[in-house]
Length: 326
Image (cartoon, rainbow, N blue to C red; front, side, top):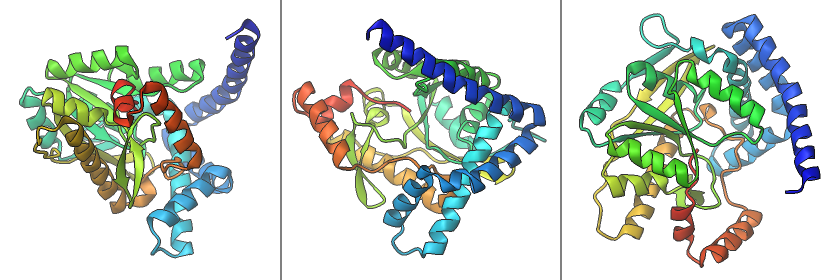
């Protein structure tokens, strides 16, 4: 990248930050409950009318062909309300405590305790449910020695700020994708520790797996790591109860019997992970991030074709060498 392009990028990031931080300052000033409520109002009345809401409608119509237009609109509005609330809650992540009187209630943590006690290494896998930042916070407060795997925002100023908010109560270690991050994940799991990751976003360097009746490109990383290291895959999900109050549910481990065919096993276990996420979403669809362009379109197929060609023609090979953690 030449100096001029780098300068323009820096200016763009500074401009974005100049808009982002005053909003976060306002939300911090008015307190968590008011910030959540104001964010929800903005989500219902402003975000609801923007392009991402249209994406949510299209995704929901395809996933739930049996639902009426009114039912779809009700879910979309709740999705937008939740996203606004999440934005308002970011400056207050340090207040999302668990335990008596806390804002995060936990059920099923005996599944987490048993998994960690096995010494095999544990991956808590989840999706963008309610305020998804609650899961790593609850795990850290419970005493698990853990690391959060995440995809940094493009804007480095925003990234640093969000990382500081997460670290107030959540895991201190944040692992980004890439070869260095993968090595660190291996180290954590081999030592019997906990990795926390979201597995519901599209990746161009993934494998196809069914999700709401259609194949979607999905990261094979959790399946590959579980099969290679023998660690435990533990599904978890956050649900918004009311305002800035949440319930984290930790489900029993995903059971899987390897066949001995590594490539086939990765595909089969990845499909089972997607099926688990879908089942959780169906319990309360308005809690999930339907604005995400999760399903593959023609432009995605062209991009994946180029990636596979560059990697030697194997989609699974691309996935293994460049797994995208979220």
